[in-house]
Length: 305
Image (cartoon, rainbow, N blue to C red; front, side, top):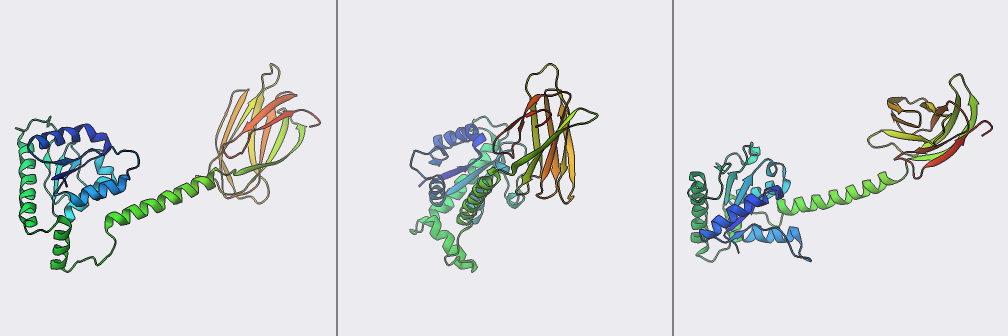
């Protein structure tokens, strides 16, 4: 069991270490090092350390105010009335924790004579003295919380704690994200064929047909057309059209330099597409790629193809 649990963002590890070492020199036992050994379970290790600690110090910084883990650990301190907050960056403390005054350690470099560190030290000592007095009767911090809940008529009676609830939600979200990534990695565009090359005023037009199996997140389709080296032929133009019911498309970007062209557009819904490539001369071999295609398509544009 540790006297103090330090809650901090991983980016603030160096500053947390300085505070931990200073408190240890004052005679406190401090749990702060979150590097775990192979085989240990991170969430379980954190929960056990929180359950057993007598005081929770939270270090508010530009990174920790965005950390759900730090906020959950701070919430545990509020619930048990053992939270001592400290500012290590000049940031706004999350709203639900503003009612507890924070020591300003923004310019603190580890010297125990600092007035703000002295405030933090006194706050920690007061909590530990109170806990020591309460545990003299043999009650543990967890039992003290339960007793307080009984006094206030808020005993949980087996209802899952917020910490366990968060872990359950996080696990569910991780499974959902993994499933969505699997779905989205499946090919969205399927090459279904091509139209005969025809001569136009702009050059020679080749058309390639694709079926869109499902909407594309976040709705953007990109084609890249690469031409093999040929001194006489080049890509003159690229375009796309919706085949069948007109559900609309917005061509948002076209880039081309003769040997390479990129076309980005946003269709509305899943529907067949026709990619048109115009080249100045034939024959010219082009390779068509897209993040939404399973594999690249290589074709030679020539009359009669």
